[in-house]
Image (cartoon, rainbow, N blue to C red; front, side, top):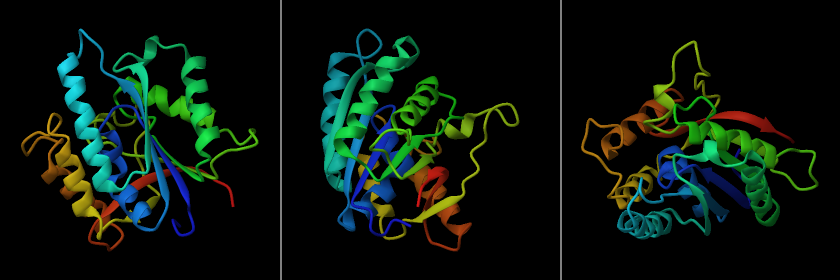
Length: 225
């Protein structure tokens, strides 16, 4: 499924979502020679986030992405936890410009059923930016799960995450866990969801469902052969 892909893009609502959702897949793609671009859609702003916290996060992002082999990242300046205040057309346009410039063959997006509103809005804008009516568009769009967001949806009332694609990351789980460990400001002790132990447990669970030692799960949004 991933063989032959030369350009991939991961759209993340906030820094660390890209590692939580598909860090192992990023590492695997990079090892295969694929150029992986990460788009961080939001940046923390005072008074919700202090300047020192944002500066610290910049260093954590660089270290995490270096561990995974990310080729390039774009950090947009939309306000974190306030995407509902951003004009939809503005967010659509910013993502569309990046899709046009990077020309990813596969696009990874947050799941629409995540409890965080930023995730829901970004899913919608990402699909607008990836519409196949444009001359250039991703041939495959996959939604990832974000531990601490996807699992908090309301059963039977909001879309449930029912994965239908699994990526074997047995050889790249350590890279994912080490990359998340670079996000020291976001790391929490187990049994908190944002712990390396919880991430490892989810990867092993997803892997076991397809008889692999570790995997990341996705919902296929669209694939064009």
